Amino acid sequence: MTKVIPLNERPAWKALGAHYLQVREVQLRKLFAEDPQRGERFTVETDGISLDYSKNRITDETLKLLIQLAEESGLRERIDAMFRGEKINITENRAVLHVALRAPKSESIVVDGEDVVPAVHAVLDKMAAFAERVRSGAWKGHTGKRIRNVINIGIGGSDLGPVMAYEALKYYSQRDITFRFVSNVDGTDFAEAVRDLNPEETLFLVASKTFTTLETMTNAHSARDWSLAAFGGDEKAVAKHFVAISTNAKEVAKFGIDTANMFEFWDWVGGRYSMDSAIGLSTMVAIGPDNFRAMLNGFHQMDEHFRTAPFASNLPVLMGLLTVWYTDFFDAQTVAVLPYEQYLKRFPAYLQQLTMESNGKHVTLDGTRVAADTGPVYWGEPGTNGQHSFYQLIHQGTRLIPCDFIGFYKTLNPLGRHHDVLMANVFAQAEALAFGKTAEEVKAEGTPDWLVPHRVFEGNRPSNTILAEKLTPEVLGKLVALYEHMVFTQGTIWSIDSFDQWGVELGKVLAQRIIGELESATEPPLTHDSSTTSLIRRYRKNK
Ligand code: G6Q
Image: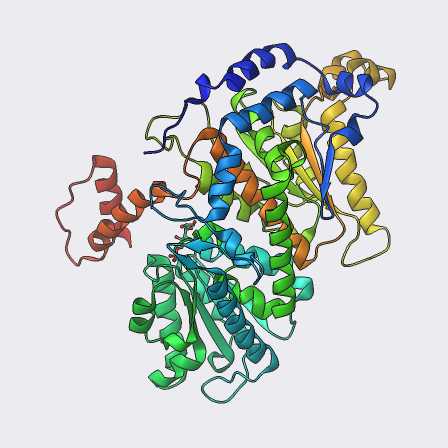
């Protein structure tokens, strides 16, 4: 079993505790006044992505101690172990190799004695050939019509990445194909997705690592029924209207999909780390193989940065350490991610799974309870919309909410003044959060005394500002990899397994049992607690 030194026994952790007591009241106003270079000094850049972390409640000493904490927590060794293909997902005894999905052909990464890089490229080539056929119209449906609609059926990691990437890269997508994503077992999701579509022109991508997930299989069967109903039940149609993305060839064949139409990936790709595997097939069909490869190249550049850059200038490491600082010392419970880019509207939802399913754990690698708080709640919405709703709480509420602002120098849709107005808001929000507005300043504006407290902004609210040139496939790859490795950094400090998800199991098992109890014609013996039993009875009576 992995040996873990409890967090609170690591020297840097103890030093950070003492240091926190000294700096917790320090104002960003003061830190900036004392160091006119702070904004530049606390900005790092790699491959066209810059991170300004100067508006954080840190000093040089804080940074030194946080980096020492990363070292004492074995971050260097963990990074190397991940990239070497060691089985660092210990509770599932698996390697964690999403980095292999974007490794260039020239690299070699060995798992269980086998170099996985050639297999990755073979699948990418197969995906590319398929994507080209769909995009060009060469792939025909059962009645000879070209495909106009592509529907990805998947959930969790087999949905959130594909939806986010499609929305993020819509600008680059082939506009004469409609893309939709069905995830929820709520029949409404499927019904609304197909209501205006012609089955003859509709192709389903069934994305499921296990090919046993209840929601996905339920939706896939409904899709099969919907499709076959249009073709007089002719099973041969399945081959033209269904492809599978999975690690489970047996189940794919059982469903009736020809395994020649199956795109493979591997158990060393976690669901929430899979958008750049075959799970990204919908993305590739949408944006084309070249753009998909550019995205992979972006991922790879950030991987190399994470693997090789010193911690003090390593973007994911710095962001991970800052979250630990706020979560564990300032007792911050959430982090807001605020992209000022409409195309990134699903990015916060994607990050919710990446961050919270990875680090929402309370047990360390050696099976003991972690000595501090772990994964904060991630949430957010694109700016400027959020400014007109929840930003009030960030500015004047009682809770500390570190924010990540994400913006771009150039817009994909230049339109009059829009982009300058948008970006002015990014800079203004971060400035207002950090420096606020004092009572004196409010009074000086002629505000009556009784109103002054309401109009004061305390400031000292931390944020990061991430900037890049514009939202390209390559930049999206870098951004996602940035957050993936940030999550890994956090998980390493907390000594948790960021790659399992046992917490989602119990509810699934209980639901399986309750499905039978809801479907049974007569009431079966119900042996739940009195609340669950009476809810089931109420539902059975009224359904
Ligand atoms: C992600 C999780 C989970 C998974 C879904 C779908 O890391 O493991 O969200 O992606 O449960 O699983 P399948 O791809 O096996 O259907």
